[in-house]
Image (tube, rainbow, N blue to C red; front, side):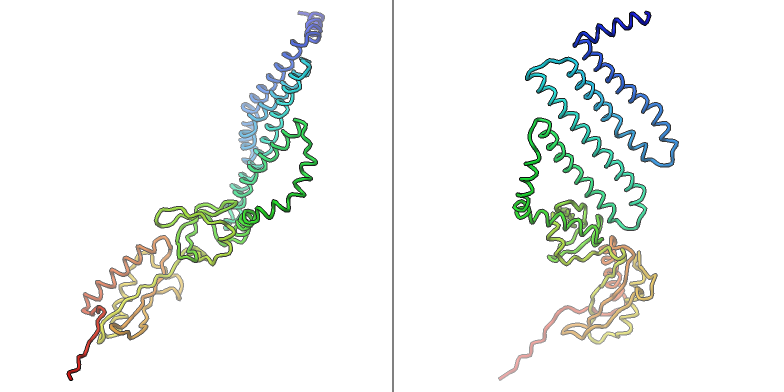
Length: 356
């Protein structure tokens, strides 16, 4: 087939709207497949040789959306070549433009999320602070909201709805909306402020004002989820949580002090009691004695109505073992007092009856 024949075929295709539209769509379809093939066979291999993983992530997450976008663009151009005319062509073109807008916005969101993921894995996880990790999570969730808003505005624009007056109306009504959503916005900013303030993080064990204890499992845009030791979820609005006095068991370090109260009978040798109990406390597993002020000690506190009251103080390396340590220490103290014949009294009251 010589050049003149090829030229004749091209002219025939050009003169036929259906053939032109089909040719345009096939060209873009083949271009999408070729780009996909080149990406998988060449760009992916080249990306593996680079030091950074950012290009690997970008290629993996964007190759399919780019192919779909090219196919929609080809379909859009094919419609123009087809020249159907009338209401049908207008509706089909608007639908196609809407799909192109959705894929384009989705592609933008994907790229931003990939960059955030890469930054989180490369830099945020290497820092001692967890604030940047939580901030990335919040931004990614905000990107999902941005996607839906951007898609809505783009579709309205495609279908001829004037978004300028709409945005102006939102600006005027924004004050009313802000008042209506005051609590919700307060929760959002409360969550962001807690993350930036580094007061709490996912995984921290906290005690709230109402004596509720639990582990923080998620800090969201509106609320924080706390899993109690009864295996129940408690969802607290961030605005309310920000105003609470929160005891963070984990910070500034996981080491925690344990206090074991106990009493002995009157007449017991105080120094012997201290010596016996201290010796037992030093047997507790996971004892933290790295610093002088953390070494175990026993205090004689008061001469109560029925007993001489003491408290044993010691630190353990991790708050996660506090219940096991309390159980072990209490058992050791009880057995040691019995073994050394130091009486453990029970509450009693002497009643004197006066004869008349």
